[in-house]
Amino acid sequence: MSQFSRGALEKACLVLKRAMLQGRVGIGEAEFRMYQETDVKEVILDVFQPVFRVHVFQEDEALYVVPSDAQSLIYKSDQVRREAMNLRDQDELHLADLCAMVLGSVFYNSSAHSRPTRAVIGLSEWFHEVDRNIGKWTQEYLTGRKEELEAQELQTEINITGIVEKWHRMRLKEGAETYRASRSEKISFLKKVAQHLQEEGLVQFYDERELAPTEKWSAIMSKHYGMLERKEYITNLLA
Image (tube, rainbow, N blue to C red; front, side):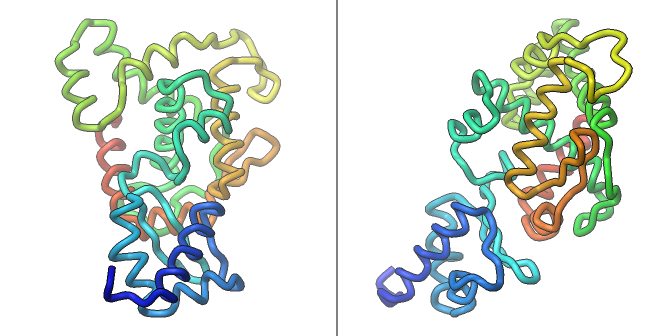
């Protein structure tokens, strides 16, 4: 770090702090202009990224930061994210992350990373996709194929058993005419996830019924290669 000037280090700290707090730094902000300076960018990319385990990148007129391990689209601690969604425990957070990943796999398929292949997805369709995907694991869980589940858990770093148990403990109300009126615990859970994604600028959640990806999500999917690889792997795993 001795090769960098104090000024470059101070500016890099300001840029990363703003990006972490907001998740996005716009072109009109001072920190965006600081990032354009070569030495500041080098500090962030060569020093701060590996230390803080983040991936910082620029897409058009904005600067973004996401976790480098691709466990989540959002750079915040597990505790902060659990509190934001009012989740009970870590297994519910894992379930929320999986639901978000399933949503992303519907918005973006493996042949079109940079732009969404779907402009809008209904809450009900998202629910059925999550339910269908978890169903594969459910069969292995119910039939006692523990070795297969354990192998998949090691590969994906996902607590599959915990996810299956959490999902199926939620009661699905029978006979609800609309998902908006339904008091289903599963639908309510997805709404929590959708609202959190909207607060983080990743989706637009219209009337609690439809979701659309934002430019921020498109930027993450097109530029953050770690997230792309993880998304493709999980999509193939759940297919």
